[in-house]
Image (cartoon, rainbow, N blue to C red; front, top):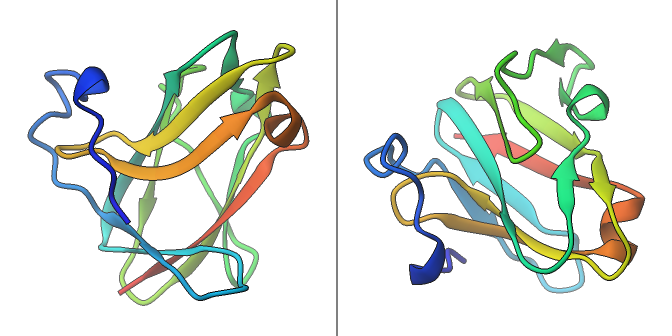
Length: 134
């Protein structure tokens, strides 16, 4: 479900970009995300300490194994990649983490779609996010 965080609104450049991602929640199953075609941009909202994307070790793959390029302008706080109608993807996020850190992963868009709460223990091993594009 989308969770709005008024203290951490997207920046002016993304404030008008429509959100593309929504969680598909199935009890006792890992969360899968549905998305509309276009570019998905994720952002790490800082909490305590530091959790940042390890951009060189993040990866996006289609279900057939094809590598999808991450935008070359990715930063430790934001990254984006294109998704196409009718395809499934896996976003494998790698993070740089300091001890006791917390953060929130959101889709950087108008309304900010909540993706994941991150803490040092979870983020240290990286996280995987399945995405299905309708």
